Amino acid sequence: MTRSPNFFDTEPWVGGVIGLGYVGIPLLVELNKSGLEVVGYDLSRDRIEILNSGSSPVEDVTDDQIKDMLESGAIFTQRTEDLKNVDVIFICVPSPLSRDHEPDLSYIRDAVDTVIEVIRPGMAISLESTSYPGTTEEIVLPALESLGLVLDSDVWVAFSPERVSPGGSLSMSRIPKIVGGVSAESTEVVTAIYRRFIEEVHPVSSSSVAEMAKLLENTYRSINIGLMNEMAQVAHELDIDIWEVIDAAATKPFGFEVFYPGPGVGGHCIPLDPQFLAWSARKADCSARFIDLADQINAEMPVYVADRVIEALDCNGGSLAGTKILGVGIAYKPNISDCRESASVAVLEELERRGAEVFVLDPVVGRASIERIGFKSVQLDDDFSSYSIAVVLTDHDVFDLEQIAAIAPVVFDTRGAYRRSGLTCNNVVTL
Ligand SMILES: NC(=O)c1ccc[n+]([C@@H]2O[C@H](COP(=O)([O-])OP(=O)(O)OC[C@H]3O[C@@H](n4cnc5c(N)ncnc54)[C@H](O)[C@@H]3O)[C@@H](O)[C@H]2O)c1
Image (cartoon, rainbow, N blue to C red; front, side, top):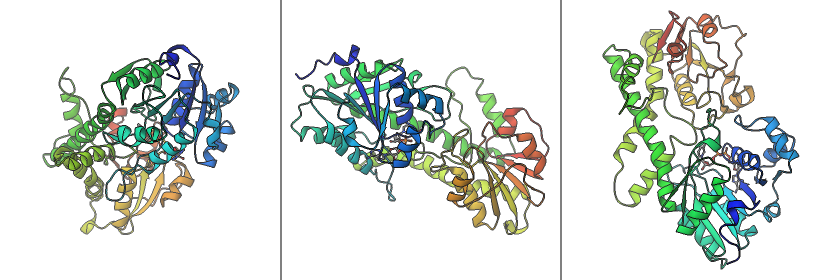
């Protein structure tokens, strides 16, 4: 035994985070806030320079928090050797899907290669990147054992899914954390590690349980959003207001959790995570029909929204040729600048495909990113007199909905934002 497993309960260990994005940076902040020394490692030179200049590249962390961390000795680095003194490594790198919807574990494998360069007996490793059940046991553990390290003696290994909601109100330390080790002792040690900076930790019996729990949470969201997206279409045909229906159903104090329809699903999690589970199911020769159906309904929403925009405009023959459309919000969810897999982008592309000239208003995302995605960026004080419609796709808090309704002859609201804000504008049509 190189180090007592109890070491992590009380000693001032050093935490290292590999991958400084929406997950890794808030994690570093929480570790640092609890008084632990931290090292943040990322391959991106830009990212490291931004952090070392005292700026935060993610919305959930302020520049002041980064400056405080730097003042307390935090290291942001691209140099692998700076990880050599850490006691615990948290892996927070991307885990996308390949073009053919297979898990792309290349980032996780690369991060594990980095761990291998710096690991020494007595360290604990926690994988936080979302992946299919079995990843920690199949990818992380064998790589460490190939160095001759002995589980529960030289090293402890676990999976702990990240549940942070960028732009949400709950800080990471207040979101309960699931921990599943590749051994009972790993679960115990890594649970103690998280208890140093997370209020509630829920240990489970294996890393596969923790991996599947994360996928189940987001599959549940995807399926329920898919259900609401389908119900929105049904209600429209029945000439019933789906938003009023949902509000009414939500008065039931049990058995009904509120989800809303929208332009589809987006981000790094909801469209992807169920696919990890579907992939695992296929590998085990069983089907995951709910996942496939929700995926299909959600993926079809941008086309449905484009149809409804045409209906709202009462276009002759359904063509949008020559129509100027203002897309309001392009991020995948409110109050963040992340546009990965954004359904708003898919809707705007569909409108363009049908001939519309699309312009985007999104001060949270900013002109440079909007133009990188391929759209023209506008500001609220521009001249909108030649526009036919504004389509609210992402309801950032900064939007002045009343002003948007005043500048466009028609507003098509895919998010129920006007209803929620209590505004009654006669030219607003809701999904
Ligand atoms: N964003 C979310 O809301 C969210 C929520 C829960 C879980 N997750 C999961 O957490 C993981 C990270 O997501 P994210 O949104 O923080 O990603 P991100 O893209 O915001 O950040 C990932 C960072 O990792 C860096 N990176 C990539 N490969 C690396 C390597 N080999 N070594 C060092 N750095 C490397 C990138 O440069 C980037 O800065 C993913 O598995 C994701 O599914 C994300």
